Image 1 (cartoon, rainbow, N blue to C red):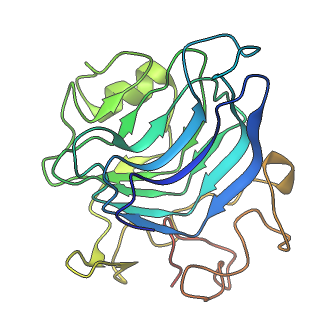
Image 2: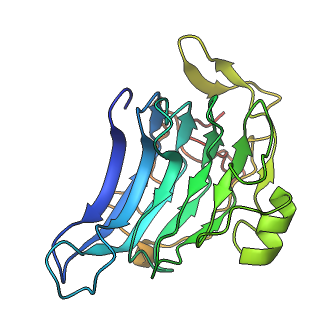
Length: 224
């Protein structure tokens, strides 16, 4: 998905309802005008009111993102209202563009679970810009964000070595740090598996087996 306002959103705007039991896996998202991936509900209001809603048991796993938020109005990953810990963001590659906003949120009442992700941007981590969490963006480093929030404990900052940024081709080279770096611990009970026995799916974006012969998995949408 590319060049949409929000390339994908799993959310709800009606009070008392959630976008729930949805798995977003093995996709490529780039050049969104505002947001690559968004979860949560609309508005700072109680859940029983119109215009609220939220997300639960939404699993966003093994996606490759690049250069979303081209109009500087959003982020690669946006967390709106009422998106609790049952919402999981894992095994993703987040390569921010010139605006360098990796994560924006979570808004009041949200505390999703983030881990095993790779983050990158050419300027590197920027205090006050790259990550906003519960209104705080003044983390002095990526490590300070990890320590303060407890999120992304096994995540890291590195160039994923996408094959091409001009096409783009978001497959990775054989020397990429994303190779075999993913977690395989999630179960179908945490989201939705569809016709697969694994929440990670059976095939990657290109149709190749999602796991290698040793049962390992890459970060991002492509397997090697």
